[in-house]
Amino acid sequence: MRRLARSSLAAIAEQNMKDKATSFDIAYLAGVSQSTVSRALRNSPQVNKETRDKVHAIAKQLNYKVDKNASNLRKQRSSTLALLLFEDPTTDQSQINPFFLSMLGSITRACAKRSQDLLVSFQQLSDDWHADYEDSNKADGIILLGYGDYVDYEEKLDKLLAQETHFVCWGAEVQGHPDFTIRSHNREGGRLAGEHLLAQGYRNFAFIGNASEHSPEFFQRYQGFIDSLGAHGIAAEQVAQFDAISTESAGDAATQQLISLKKPLDAIFCASDLIAIGVMRALHRLGYRIPQDIAVMGFDDIPVASFATPALSTIQQDTNLAGELLVDNLLRLINNQPITVNQIEPRLIVRQSCGADTD
Image: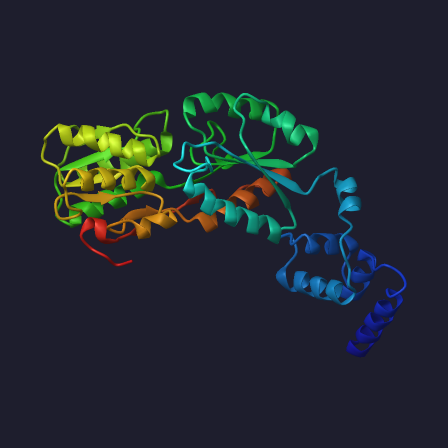
């Protein structure tokens, strides 16, 4: 049988020097149906790994290339996903939150592994996304990163739902459709931050970041933080809270207001790393030592967090896993498959800004 398989493969390979190999040739040599070959070449989880590897190996030997145009005509799909980024205020001209820059790389790699092209653009909140992308066959589905004021953003999501657009988003849960969202367990992340600060002996706390329905992720982090403090007898009323969007300048401004209260303070938990970096900048300027006078904790673990002075303790969100899940879950929605995982567990990263360093 092995001798026959090798001779058959050699014969087909020789023939393919003249004629283009087909999926039927691969199916014959692999001993499977042509439809199984198609699924295997798409890395479908419906085909077991052994069969997928076998099909890929034969395809490589035959120098087989998928005819994407023919495949797309059969499926009426573009094999393209659209990634729409919300424009955030930044200190440079990128207008992209650094946290999403990290996720962009993982989304790009996840698309490449699944033979999907990626169209990257900025969200235009005044335009109809579905008309620009899926409805015009530019993309089979949309990944949304960022949203600004979530109360305003929900109207756009409702429009996508009404148009039955295939989409997933990072962050706040889509009302009535939790499977459309990939998110960190924000409340648990807030709890981890509180537990760590308490364990370090801090007792006078502040939270900087919007804590309302307008910023549901920040609000959940605040709630988790208050949960942990409450379990140790510290009431929410004892925790100063100042609103701030996710920028360094907002963190700086909120810190100046906080310090002006002249209340006992030894630890600040910030809703994002960008806010925390602004907080540390303000504290340094005002003459406070970190962490000797006031400890600072962030959330996200963006690359610059480890290079801050002092290095920033934070709650890490796994951007590699997030990118994989965003792409996988969007493809599942497109293929009418169930979503099984949509939440990522956060991880405490301890550095010098809280008086200890295990990173």
